Image (cartoon, rainbow, N blue to C red; front, side, top):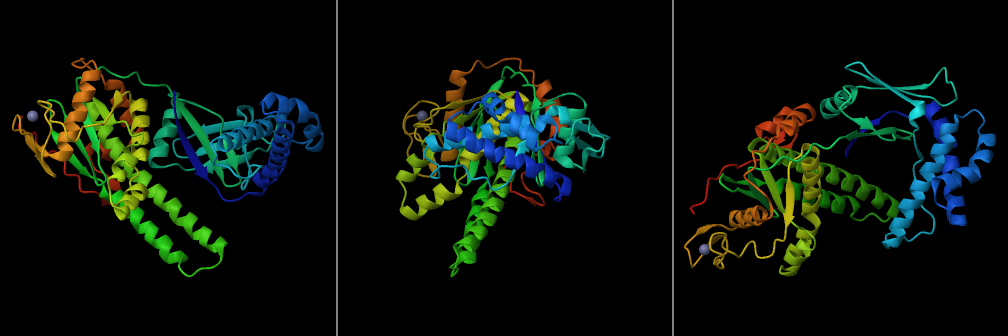
Amino acid sequence: MTTLAIQFRFSPNPEIDRLLDACGTMVMEAVSWALDNNKTATHTIVKELYPSFRERFPGLHSAWVQKSARTAAAIVHAFRRRKRRGREEKDRPEMRKAWVYVDKSVFRWEWDGIHLTIRISVRPHDENPIVLRFRPHGKYRRLVEAWARGECGFGEPTLSRTMLIIPLKFPDVPAYEPRSVMGIDSNERSLDGFEIGGASWTLDTSWGAAKCADHDRRIRRGTKGKQNPKAKKKIIRKHSHRRKNRVRELWHGVACVLIWMALNANNALVLEKLQGLKARIAASMPKRLRQRLLNHWSIRTFHAILKHKARVYGVPLIEIDPRGTSSTCPVCGGSLRGRVELTCPSCGLSGNRHILAAWNIARRGQAKLPIGGKGRAEEGIALFHRLQSPRWGQGVVGAPGRPLPAQAGSGQLPS
Ligand SMILES: [Zn+2]
């Protein structure tokens, strides 16, 4: 089961404000009660607080009381998890925005091909439910259509004063038996691939790092000379948010292209295991370079996105230990010499170091996977067609209106 969430923004609305005032109060009280009494199970909270909440909010459908308790339990659980990991200093969770889970019994949706109409009942047998209408486009539209066709179910929606999030749950596409493998070497400025029995390629991804540096510069300029910590924080939040979105958008595109390549060639994807990778590389660098790498290289984000998409479309993907992949000869196992162009003194193989690393990664993956399968990726391809923009199939990568240089097909290495 894979979850793809769709989120819709709407402008503030008095009915929703009233509903969230009530639910927000219940959630906050339930959070306090749960922490004071050290009871965090949803049903315990409901059992304890339900009668008094029902009395205080008599007009409300009982589902809202139940879900407020459920929301409180979720907040407490997340808070405790952060606390355990040492990421939380306060003794109470801070709740900046009121939100609540929406029970399916008060949630109706309707899709007419253009508009998604959501009806949310506030009272029991509600004659005048809250109506929200959205006009999804692009990717969301494809997701909503899949939902309307019954290809996916949906989980608990969440509602805040200005946003509705609906998690769509897709059944997993079973992974196919790969015909061959493609190793992917992740570098600071590029991704390099090597397909066993196929071509090698280089994809320039420096755009992401450049955008990170760009937003960092804006944060520095924007906060320069400012004394008010609140104003500073606001600027930082704004730019960090944008930076995150733009980088994610880039990696989504790149991941889509790779998934598309793998699906069409019936390949398995092989990645390096990343735990501690950045730190290992950074240890051997001068300070300035190291800082740049740690701040601007969002490679874990990319791997997480790629792994998620591989699961959705049934692309087999494994991770291997990357130790020695950039210094060992993929043909004879000797140690390579050189800096950018590497050569093997024992067998004479030479080539670009990133491509050779990708070759090694592919070989390690090949050793771990049963390959040569007939591979049937039809199901994944069909799903990809339904959910993704057709432009990914053409290998166009980059932010909208700003395509990245994709230097694919740098040819096969001499072997
Ligand atoms: Zn060699």
